[in-house]
Length: 144
Image (cartoon, rainbow, N blue to C red; front, side):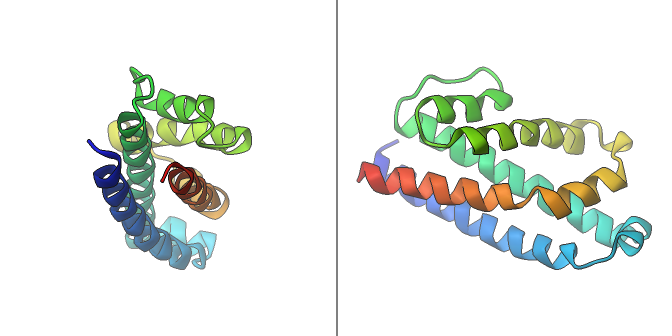
């Protein structure tokens, strides 16, 4: 994949992330009691958190491929590679370490999903998605 093609694909993914984050921002306004009781609200939160994490993982993998960085064996290691290659800060790396684990719960252990944990993630952890976008775009801009 050439860097120009990769850049366009990454930007497309990040535009989708903006859309998902808009939906999540709306869901942040729902009070906890309503969120926990309403399967519509909870389902939307779960879904858009999952999609947002998938975008982060996809973008990280695209950057790794485009710049011929070492390929990790597992999803959880993609953020380590970006950190090691100075694509993201130490702080963001530490924040995102839980994202791939949370994704695995959403996908593979869905029968165990704790609604309160989804609500807390929604309230406290989605700013890291915006920060990932900012740092990824900054890195790409420096490479042009």
